[in-house]
Image 1 (cartoon, rainbow, N blue to C red):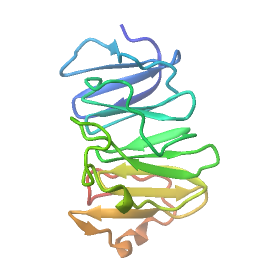
Image 2: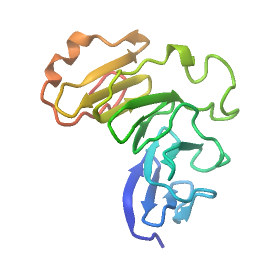
Image 3: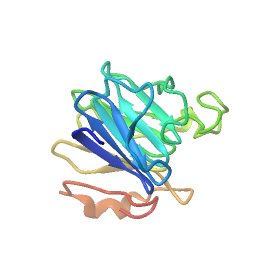
Image 4: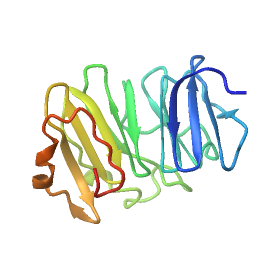
Amino acid sequence: GLPPAVQLGADADTTCAHTADGRVWCFGEAAPVPAPLPGVTGARRLSVADRFVCVVEADGGVRCLGGFGERRADDRVPGLSGVVDLRHSGLVACGRGPTGRLQCAPLPHPTTGFGSGPQWPIPLESLKYPPMDDAADVVVEMATICARPADGRWTCVGEAQGEPIDADRLADLDGAEALVLVDSEIG
């Protein structure tokens, strides 16, 4: 029952498909039959992680739904606009603009939404991400954000186990075409 997909995203127990008509269908452990997410139309990109489904809308804005559609579909992520590609964790979403400009923003609290307090998910003033105007790729895992310019070296900021990332541990990333963060300490 799933229409042809143009992009897939998956988490531990849910898989979502972005279809050519701009809808997002999800299925998994809690919902074994594929069904479209209510209120999501015109999606251009999809990111699935940490119980959030985030979509890039036709205007480049980003909308994230917690609990795979249990939240209302009107939670646009403040601070993200003109996005053409997107990655996120349960704490933060990062998008690239058409020229590669990187922008990141905290995600909403899973129960109370945006503006629910200065410490959730992380204080906006403490959100750090690699300043980059020509990002070719971005990877996000919890409070760690890594980005790579089209012809350059990966740059990572954030923390692992509550401590700032040790830049010396990233020396072996020179020339890496791709990076996968599987948890806050392992790449």
